[in-house]
Length: 64
Image (cartoon, rainbow, N blue to C red; front, top):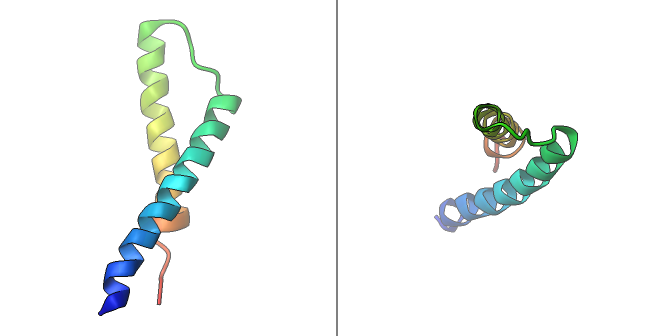
């Protein structure tokens, strides 16, 4: 029963760390635009891209 309490915390910590790494990488590879409309699109794409990658790499991994 203890695993069911520890695993979600572990996943959360790993996901947060990986999110920060991928976000930094995305910002380096894709500079933030200056225009408001472009910034809005850029922010949405950044979040979708980074969150999708975190889900694939960390959250959806089978744990025992």
